[in-house]
Amino acid sequence: MSSVQIARYIISFSWLYHGIFPKLVHIAPLEKLITASLGFSESMSYLVTKSAGVGEVAFAILLFIYYQSKIIIVLNIIALVGLLFFVAALQPQLLVEAFNPVTTNLPIIGLSLVLLNSLKAQPNN
Image (cartoon, rainbow, N blue to C red; front, side):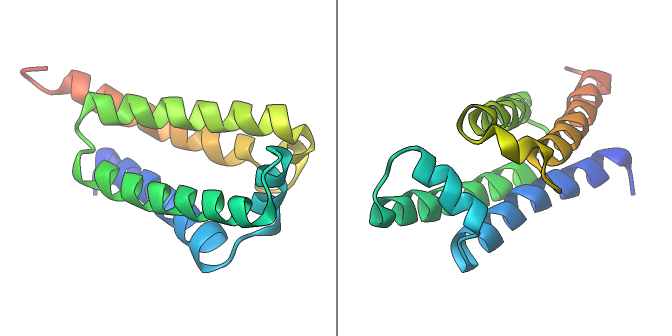
């Protein structure tokens, strides 16, 4: 399997997993903490979290299908950087916890750069 396909699968899986399990199947305590930081009511936090989960699943599918689209890859990088800054601003103590946004988002950004580099290497790009 090529490095491009490995990057494609891992990035898509990451969005899919983070959309399904900590948001749709069961809202993780950290997800509740982050949405509570925004000042939402409990019912609105629930809706925001579930909506984010649906969005992440949709983005995972979109990225899996259109992994050769520069726009999709750049949107992925922007989203991951944005989410990292979002957590840093709202709950900075989470940045030093196990499996934190630094240790999850930065490697996925790195794999996204692998995909971008593969586009540059293709003829007609």
